[in-house]
Image (tube, rainbow, N blue to C red; front, side, top):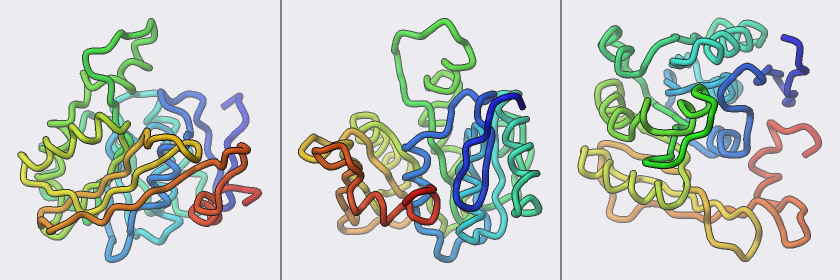
Length: 238
């Protein structure tokens, strides 16, 4: 662990060995998702383990994390072991499809993911990076099928996706019997179009999903009040 950790208010974590580093997408998702009535949660593709640590801070009793990349899983396990919630966090180094087969009796109130989203796109020269960013190794169908097997009847699936991929995922989820319950349209800078979607699904359809808009930065580059209010329990300096 030669690189310096990323420090939050109540925990620190290393992320330099993981395929995906700590980023705004995951932090917004981990802050936004409701944890009311959530006792057990599962993170699909945990990377360095940021989402389980955030959920544990928010008083989720037990969080399992699945990660197929060996270096990422090792780093997540180390980060969990160093946190005050180490007894509540467990990482499994395996594909989510194998996980649900090996542990068919594990059921969760919340399944969360910051998944790969590139489909049929040009790949770079780093296989591990491609694995984390492209849907070849973790497709939308894989996520939906795993969620259907592992969610409690009243459980929820939460994830963050680019806008266009999010719209596509909503359609796939509907076809699979998971229905959009909440949607957060994320705008990077005031006045621009949304470029990310936080999505929450359940088995129970609703007449109209709860839809809100969230802006990260003002025109002058400063963080908005929305951003500060949502992340004040996590980021230093807010």
